[in-house]
View 1 (cartoon, rainbow, N blue to C red):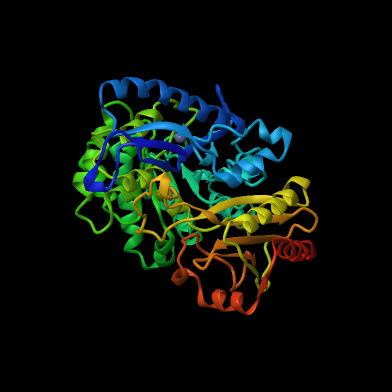
View 2 (view 1 turned 120 degrees about the vertical axis):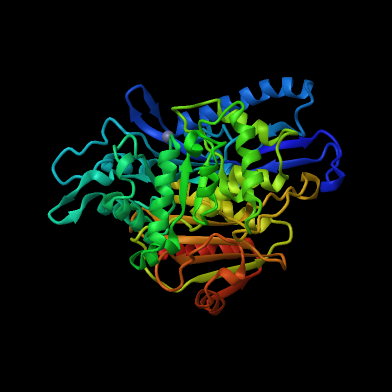
Length: 504
Ligand SMILES: [Zn+2]
């Protein structure tokens, strides 16, 4: 998280000079694997973020001297639970840095090993396996979100569409949570609207995962918009349109082009900032503010921060510093949406694969005014993970319901930025039995801490990370209250909870 400080009073926003705010940051575009000269792993990502922070600090000095900034970046803070996990093992602790960026959406390069080795084998099979093994294992699973990649032109094998099958495997078996498509690298720029890419996009919509397209020019953006329109008018795509979200990586590289904003007025289309730098950056935000404000959503709901590391590196600094500058046409809530809220809202559901089973939930509650009980419980779960009896598949914080991201609160009043650091879902997998479950930890308004053990499948699973009781299915709510037990001490509560975990 990036802590920023107001350089002057902003009475119209209720901000005082010296007020500090915590910005949570998600990088929505990041590659891992190996492609010719490029190579990257989780360690490389954290190293890059540490370097990016160093460069931001250097540039900040000049910008402050020229009085260009409204908020000065002052320091980095790691999210407490994630950093605690990293600190619990010596060879993890040395990776506990680079917390300028809190979460990273990771997908393959056109890897050296992405080409099929036999007939009928999909492109990117090995790449997707590698992304899953990096992103769904402790400690990196607390920081990384894995997306798959496929080649829609893989054709069919024994009557089955190869790319669609690989997408299903990546999402349902590996637990990858989105899809990256690269029309230029996989040579389908001219056939985006044709049957094969369309079938892949349709399946992604049905699976409810976001699709990020590389877009290097407006021609590609226009084609993607036409594809979405034609799917919307096709009764066969009804289910797909319910879950479809499309992200235009690189904003078509033309942030001033009106066709970009025509596409962004579509409720399911979004844009990501990587490659934009220098004067492109103010053009993007001014144009978005001007052209998207009339719609019924916030204009800033449409733009996601991304770096495209390792193809690009310090360019990302221009985006972050522009958001903090006097030139930026929005509030801290707009900044937070761009830096993290939109990406988290697009991913939206907690990690799961299809291997989980369906069992009734079990809720453990305890009065916990001082957070000590919550910290004790966290310590015992971290111990399970570090000792290796359970692996952490993901750590997903609860977020505000879509369209309701709040204004930020200064640190002196708690520093809330929308990401609920004390309410989250841990996706866990037992080592021995390969059982998968969710541990849903919540602070209740009455100062109770609630820990619910949930199956990842069936009627009583948790489908959304949006923190609003009206979005949780009534069946789940009822079932939790039927299986709820209250405890008086953290010792009693965690031992009963661990007993249950060990039994599964
Ligand atoms: Zn890229």
